[in-house]
Length: 433
Image (cartoon, rainbow, N blue to C red; front, top):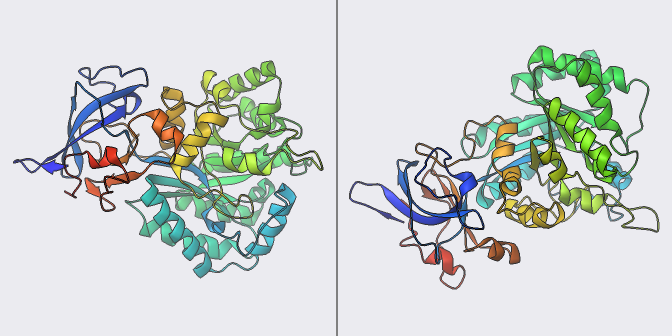
């Protein structure tokens, strides 16, 4: 990347047409993989111009930075001290509660800082993190993550969700917590549907939560149906409430795993209802494939996973998230968005050369989080890019790619060598602006 005489700089890349300004009509529709060769002009940390190129041979495949719609930074990197080797939901919950009783501000800060720094270098620009907000670990977790939110503002935007039993929102303590969450720009959270026991008060508690969120103008993000039991029970309970009275706030169903076990006609009906009620869904394949579907001695009997394509066809906004980072719920995930994209292309049938295979990582979660930038490159957009060492989607899916991250026109790390990433090294000059 070389500055020209005017002080601007140019980059020649391949970008998905889905991430380029739809109103710029001199750009082609893209090749069979939806990619367009372009030259970007960068100036003062922004996109100054986008020019079409005739040839794409050897150009690196680039993306705009991803958005993580569902994480748990308060418990990240705790597997070493609190492992759950059974891989079962009950074991994860038991160990998680033990860990939460011993949390300190310093511990959560160290975990969250490590996770945020890693996310920044991986190419994430925003994260929505749920926080265990009941018990002795709640206050230190919120104190630590609110401080991280301020410290990382402008690099990785951090949105916070208070995770408590939904009945808590109907108590005086719950209303106080909700006011603090709303003041911090956060969301109300909770758990609905199996494997957590259903009680008669669920319907009333959910109604109280929806009314409280509406009064505060505070969004909702629920853990729903994270199980292989009683498919879709939690989602249907939520929809019954929303079809009577829909609050004027964003509502997200995270997981919605057991919907994937319903017969196809039932999935279609439920997806249509979700779309009519403007409920968004976050699919979480890494944790769900690890944790769910274990049934006594007959592992792999069922693999519950939100039906991403079915939901999208009905018009539901769907994002795909990484969820846990080396904690009792999943020992192996580390929040790398490219690894998540590679996994989802297979298990969710979400090929990135199709618009609906790519949007769950970029524009859909940006809309869910209400970010100022939708992730589309146009004149005036941030000069923020995730540039890979691959020259095609096939190369990216075949092996973990090398990458470089550009933020406001500045590289985050030194250039790779020719041996490490030939496609990146073929750029004219990878020195920082």
